[in-house]
Amino acid sequence: MKKQAVIDQMTESGVLPVFRTNDVKHLISASRAIGEAGIGCIEYTLTMPDVLALIRAARQELPKTLLVGAGTVLDGKTVAKAVRAGAQFIASPGCSPSMIRACKALGVPSVVGAITPTEVMNALKLGADVIKVFPAPSVGPGFFAEIQGPFPGVVLMAAGGMSPANLGEYVAKGAQIITCLANGLDAEAYRTGRVAAITRVAKTWVAAVRRAR
Image 1 (cartoon, rainbow, N blue to C red):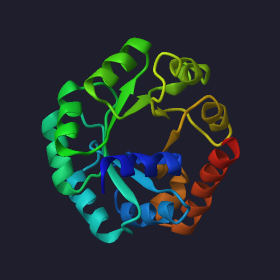
Image 2: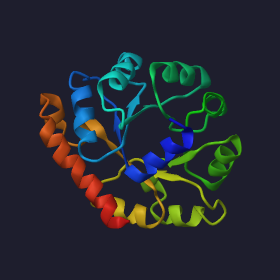
Image 3: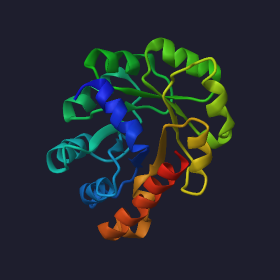
């Protein structure tokens, strides 16, 4: 899948559920349940145990229409490992030049964390594809509107502290992708593997983004 097509699918989806947990027993089934809610991308953070094997399993077992990315990637060497495992996009909480260079070399989108205009400028100069404003509540929705003045066309993601109740403000101001804690959509349902409940909650996020758009 070409890089721009991946970015387009992420922005069209509008919601990026991020799995960050040590409890991975129901990870694949919960991922499938999220896809069934109409979400087109998920992220597995590298803080999870044996995550590269989980990415491989997800790419083999989940529908091909559901993008699987690797998160909390801090350097270029890790990018290469994640891409070999099957990651289709790479995300980081901050700006790592080696991470961005590796993504460019391997043809995968880079999602790069930034929280100030200077950080946004530096990330874009290095070739970042998506700017992840993290933690978004520390700057508020207005930041998303203002930052597009000096950086027209920038693809913005709002990460941290999002909920169906407040995400509309961020979408209205220019956030094209909203993150959520995937294993926290319904923590008890995730723990017990009740995937239908996960799908129901995930649909509320999709609906909230669509209303805001």
